Length: 167
Image (cartoon, rainbow, N blue to C red; front, side):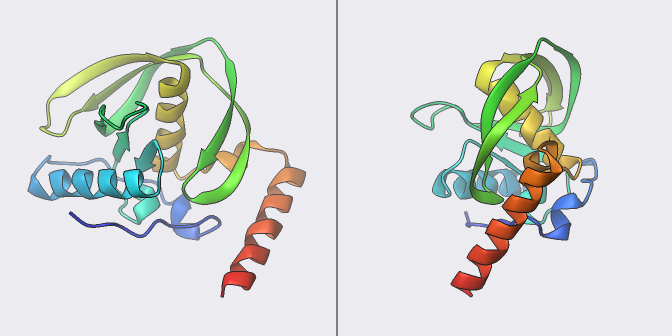
C-alpha cells in the first residue's frame, strides 16, 4: 500500500469530472487500498479518487469512530434524496477550512463494491453528507464552492497566504 498525495484547493485538477470505472480489477482494488490508507493517515472520513489525481469514479468512506467500517463506492450515483440538513464540513483538499453546507438528509446511493458487485445503500446523517461530498468531488466540485462568493474569496486568500508561508 502507498500514501497518495492529496491535491489542494484551488488546484484545477480538482475540477476534473471523473470517468466511470469500466472494470473492477486489481488496479482498482489497489487504488481503493491506497486511498483508504491515505484517508486514514490524513486523517479523514472520506476520499474521492479525484482528490489524489486519479480521475475515475471511486470513493472510500469510513465514518466509524474506530476506523473499522471502510466502504468503497465505485461508480456511485445518488438515486433518491430527501430532507435537508445543515452540517459543518471540512475537506482533505481544503485543510483547516470548515463551514456549513446544506445537503439532503437522506440519500439512496447505487454503486459497485470493491469486488465489482452492485449494491444500494440508504444513508442519513453524517454518512449521507459524506457520500454527497465525495460524489461532488467526482463531479469536479469542492464543498467551498457552495459558500458565498465573499467567503470563497476569503478562503482562497487564506490558502494562498498559507502556501506562501510554507513555500
